[in-house]
Length: 426
Image 1 (cartoon, rainbow, N blue to C red):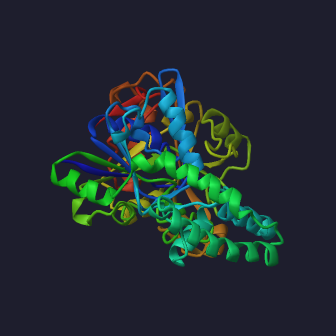
Image 2: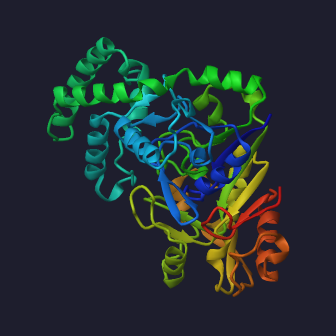
C-alpha cells in the first residue's frame, strides 16, 4: 500500500495535473481534497489537451477510482459539465469510478455574485479572486450556514435551507453590495436537476477511503493551488480560501495522518503567480514576457496571464518545511532553454536585515530585495531527455543547485508538457 500526497509548493500552476496523471499509473484511487473550480489542471496525452477543474487528474488512466473529498467546494453545474465532457470521450462510463463526498459543500449562485461584487468594490485593493464563489462558500462552511451535497439530495431539507439562506443573502446583496436579488425558483429548480444527475455518485467517501487503505490499495491525494496560497501559511491576504498544504489531505479527505506515507511537491524551474500580492523575484521586463510566452503561462481556468520571475529558493524551502516534502517534481525545465545567465534567489534582504524564510507580513514581503546567484544557461533542447545524463551539463548543474538550495531530492523532472516528456528517477 502507498499513500502519496501531491501539493504545489509555489503560488499554484506548477504542473500538478501532469505529475498526478503520471503517478496515477501506479495508483488505484485518486482523491481531490480541497479547493474548487478555481483550480485548472492541464493534461497533455498524445495530441489531446484536457483541462480539469474538479475531477481528479488521474481520470485519464483507465480504471482509476476518482474521489472528490469533503474538503472540496463543488459547483454542481461545473462538475456536471466536466463529467459529461469526459463521458462523451469514453471516461467515467462506469458510475463506480467517480465518488463524491456527501459532506462536500456546494457553491451557490449567491456565492459567485458576492465574490464578484466584493472584488469590484475593492478597486485597486482587490485580492484577485477568480470570481467562482470559492471564498464565500468556505465562509458559509465555517459560519455553519453552508449547504452540503447531502442536503441537496433531500428535497425538503434543501428547500428549507435555501429559503432561509437566500433571504439573508439577498438582503446582503441589495443593502451592502448594491446588487440585484437572486430568484429562488430559478435557483431551486436548477439545483434539484443537479441532484438527480449527481445522486448515483454520492457516498461516504471518508469511509470508502478508510476501507481502501485497510485493503492495501494505493491512493494518491491531489491538492489544488500552491503552498504560498494557503490561507494560513501563504502570503495572506493574497491567498485562496482553503488550506493547500499536505496536512489538509487528512481533514479534506477524512483520513488519519498516520495513513500518509510520502509528500511530493510540484515546483516550476522558475516562479509564477496569478492575481495580486507580493512576488519578490517577478520580472517586469522582456525576460518575464519571454518566460510567459515560452511557458504558455496563462491561467487554465481564467486565461489570465501569469506573472513570471526567477526561481525563489526561499519560497520552496519554506514549502518543503511546512509540507514535510519527501521529494520535489521539478517542472518546465525546458522553458529556461536559451536563457543565459539564469538567476536563482537564495535569500531576501530588507532594511539591512537578511531573511532565509518568507516574512509573514505581506507589506514587508513587498519591500524585500531578492539576493541572487547566477548560473550558466544552455541552448540545447530538452524535450527528448529521459534520463539525467541526457541533460546538457549546465541544465544538470542547475537542477543540482536547486536540490542543494531546497534541501529536497528531485525524483521527477519534467522537460515538456506531454506525459512522456519526463525524467523519472524514483
